[in-house]
Image (tube, rainbow, N blue to C red; front, top):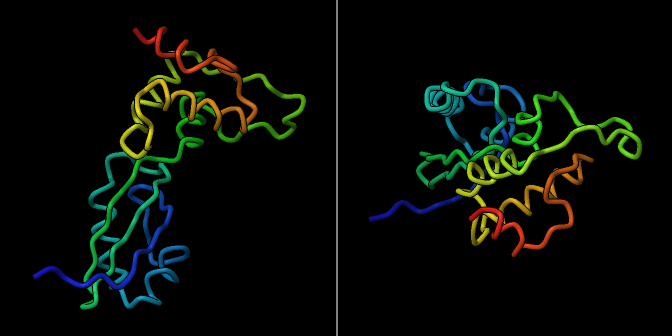
Amino acid sequence: MAKAIKWYIKLQIKWGQANPAPPVWPALWQHWVAIPEFTKRFNDETKDRMGQTLPVIITVYEDRSFTFIVKQPPAWVLVLEKLKLKSWSKVPQKDKVWHLTFQQLKEIAEQKMVDMNAVDVAWAMLTIDGTARQMWVTSDIHWVSLEEVRAKLK
C-alpha cells in the first residue's frame, strides 16, 4: 500500500551545503521532518557539484518520512555559470556586454531540458534566451523564429 502524502515542500539549496539553518530548518520543522537526516542525505547525494543552487522538491508522508527530488539548476544560474559571471548587470540599460553564442545556448538548453516542458531543444533554447534577455545578456538567436533555430540545429 502506498504511503499517504501530507506535504510537498519546495526549496532552493546549494548542492552539498544543506545545513539546519534557514531556509531548510523553518521549512522542514513545521512539517515535523527529521532535519539532520534530510541534510545528511541531501549532502551525500549532491556532493559532486558543491555550491551550485538547486531546486528541491521534498515529499513528506503522514508517517513523517520523506523523499526528495533534486531538479536542474534554474536557467539564470546556468547562464551566469556559462558566462563565468558572479551576477548580472547592475546598470541594465547601459551594460549589455555579455553575449551567449548559439553553442552555449544549446548546451544550457540540453542540460535544462529534463525539467522543462519544451517540445524540443530549439524551443528550450528560445526559452533560455528569454531568461538571458531579462538579465540583459544578448545572444545569437535574439529575435529569431523557432523555425530558424530548428534549421540551424540540423
